[in-house]
Image (cartoon, rainbow, N blue to C red):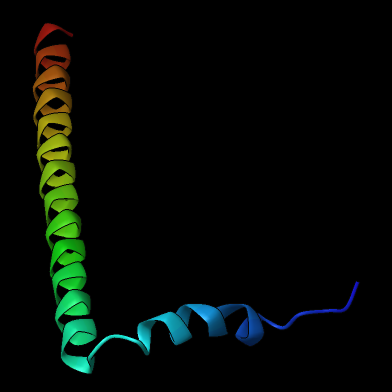
Length: 69
């Protein structure tokens, strides 16, 4: 079995994109890029909410523990 380089494996994908007008490819890539940024922003937002809740719960728990001891 002959070795196939990574570029040779990607070539058919790029050849299929060559059949479309460049503006369609660029527009689709822009949409995919915008969606990727949107998803990353949502994940960051929710991770900050989780971090905020953990800090509040931990801080209030520590304050209650210190108050009782």
